Amino acid sequence: MPKAKHLQRGEVKKTVSMSLSDTSLQRLDQLADNLGISRSEAVEMIARGEMTFTGEGDLLLGERLSSSSPKP
Image 1 (cartoon, rainbow, N blue to C red):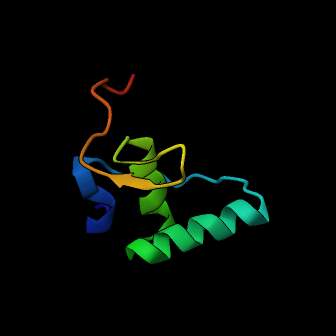
Image 2 (image 1 turned 90 degrees about the vertical axis):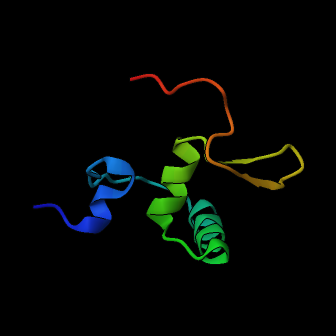
Image 3 (image 1 turned 45 degrees about the vertical axis):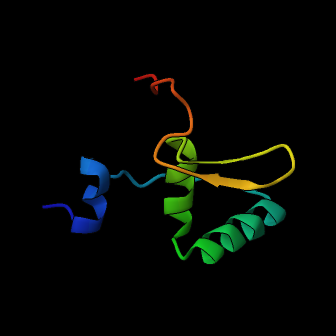
């Protein structure tokens, strides 16, 4: 049975590998640390449209920032 933390949002999470530059990894770590979440959760929120950035670099958070549905 999957761990409870892998059932967030009603979906089982899959392990994936990503390659990032040192700068990108540092920024991802800083973002996650500032929000008190893991790297994985930060990436999840960005991918789901729950976190985005303005042209000025400001962070926006919300349940869904786009009215469009994700494509299957």
